[in-house]
Length: 188
Image (tube, rainbow, N blue to C red; front, side, top):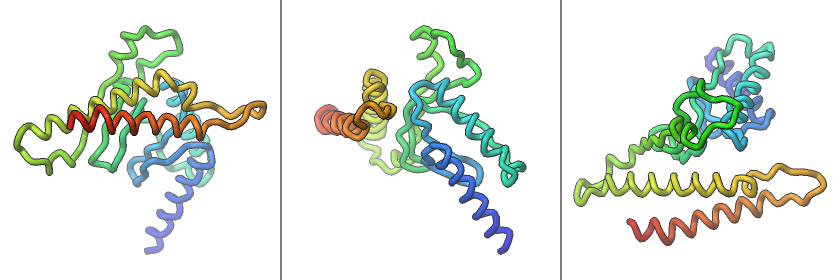
């Protein structure tokens, strides 16, 4: 009981350290922590995650904890551990700071969809396939929109400018809501 309580306190402290260093914790368990870095590029996000892990590991309390970046998602639609999908970077080792061609970037991406919800859909009329097609289309459209408007959505605060991030985020969510109501609703 005492050991369990100490582990919970240490885990809570670990999550607090991530938040203190600017990461948003999406999901956390004893074996996996998923964070949002809010970085524009994959290279920046991976570098930031490695930096945060190193800062945490340098604290005396966390010397014995192994933290490493395993996977990077450029765009993630997350419900829970068995219902998620998005644009995933295939190989973190292939990242480099040079100008990658558009084809090279696309070759290093995949769009995995893991939605346990689909198992509970009726087997008639290929509803499961339609469900995955709609999710695939939504994620791809949202990712493309994000790529085109990333400057407006993830706008770093500069003291000389008024803070507009909230408005930009609301515009992004409004545009996605319109897309869901029009195109996706029609598809379903």
